[in-house]
Image (cartoon, rainbow, N blue to C red; front, side, top):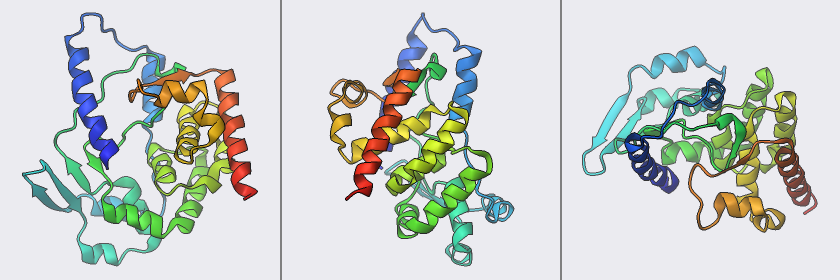
Length: 249
């Protein structure tokens, strides 16, 4: 995806900036802990042990010109998986890879921010076109599986959040609000809400100060809002209005 490539180029430049800076300091323990919380990957239970075994030995095809390639399980083996097992496979593995992406630079005070974008958990790997096609072709089932998995521990890993955005699962909004309200600490669920409103050009959000700060002309991939009660309430209120508007159409 183009956004993934853009993030990679931006990360390369900003990482160099951090490396050259004399003012860098280690993020606080609270910030580091929240970073780990954000990077959580949900593991669907459907054939999980089987899929993890399959991920050990995969077919790799490199493309020197693009400095990337694909890494996937053999087509015959994939074809014999059930739909749920295929879902688990796609949630745990991105089939395309690139060697041009650098590591994420450290962030200060992540626990105090609501970001405009989700962290890129796949780093040098990303979903292939065929993987995205699977998610979209089985959209209704994918939403059921997402809700089932999230309900088990009231956690939505970053892979699940990206899936919701990829298939534009707006109908899951009320469920996500309930999930968020259990712990009120997963700011990236609020990010998902904002990205859905942005995608659908929800007017009250598009015209807001929040939108201009996160997605305006001067935006970058670390743009954020202050993570406080006022912004939390505003985002949930807006996304509820957005959802209700969709439901009434």
